[in-house]
Image 1 (spheres, helix red, strand yellow):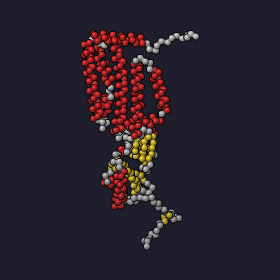
Image 2 (image 1 turned 135 degrees about the horizontal axis):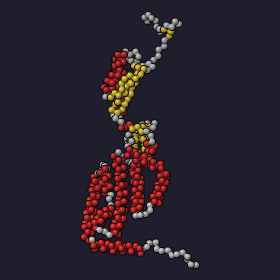
Image 3 (image 1 turned 90 degrees about the vertical axis):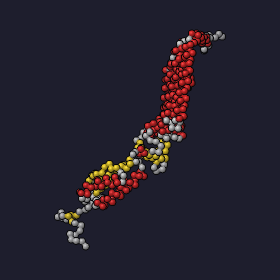
Image 4 (image 1 turned 120 degrees about the vertical axis):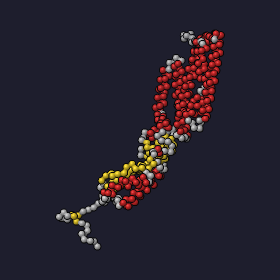
Length: 383
């Protein structure tokens, strides 16, 4: 039975490749014969450029090692420069001297292609090192540590590497004339699918990055969130652990924690305390005028700063005075004893001045049939 299908040709056109290779060899031979002096000068210039770039890379290594312990921006910049690869250095030198040497079209096209590949992937490497270096610099500056942080940085490195090199590959293919529309669409659909499948993990991961960069709190800070409060013990990849004042360890996801209003009491520069002091209505007006100054004198004598000292309102059984004062620092162990000393000093001073501190009282008056008040005791002297 005869085969009706036409015979298939070779998948690779070897004859075309041989022709192109032969043409490139002939052009190169003609170029070497006609421009040998320019080629020698260009080669010397390229060698100088390569040596200079290698020296710059060694400088980056030294800068990286010098700032290794502090992990400052010098370490980040040095590590980024040190990641410059030899292929990029050689292609940069070739690109700079190819025009002067008068390279033929085939050689120039080859150099341009290799330069595009080298520069795009080198840019991806530099961007990765800068981003990761910035994250590590911030975490080291804020004293973040632990296995959870190392796991987070490992995952972040993987995600950044995949994203940057995927973009670099698309850019290279686009410069080669390849239609990358389908590839970009496929990467977009795949990214959306992965994002939907792991949106909870990514949400907590980005929340952890927000904590590292925005710094609403750090390990050791005392915070209040919602109806809870405690001290930060560790900040992990997915959750933050908070030691409550009652002793238990509370674990909350990073995303849920950042969705709440957070009061960081560890960074305040003073503690404000308030007293409401009721004075009896029987107190003489001259003494009432002295009350604000007396309260201010007592607080300032203990080292506090008065924010307000004055009359507040007419109470049901007292004349109420408001006292608000600030204690420098954020140490409650210092604020509580000072508050107690101020309270005792107020009671002692009021007693010496004859100012009565009111308490809830009630007086009942009895009237006679004619409407006159009946006193609870006889008019004459009592025995």
